[in-house]
Amino acid sequence: MAYDIASRLHRTFINNMRARRLELELPQSEAAAKMKIAQSSYAQIESGRRTPTLEMIERVAKALKCEP
Image (cartoon, rainbow, N blue to C red; front, side, top):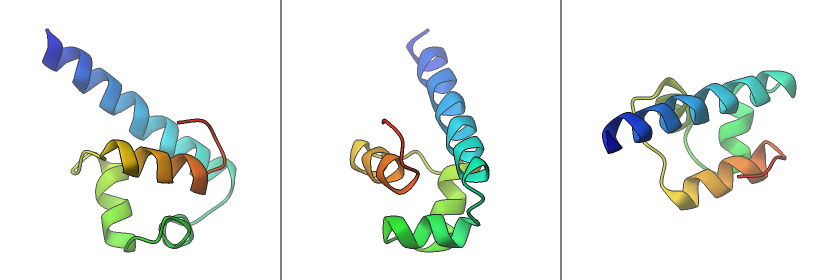
């Protein structure tokens, strides 16, 4: 059950992350640059292949101008 909740939260996070980036009309490369990470790392987070740390979630929020 805890896994289901974590999985749902992860999917919600990446869906919101992608939607916000598109709302701002930012390519992944620009969002990644604002976060000071490689574009490939950003793509892995946004695709769900990499789970972001709390620090990374904070960096996403700052780069995409939203609340974590």
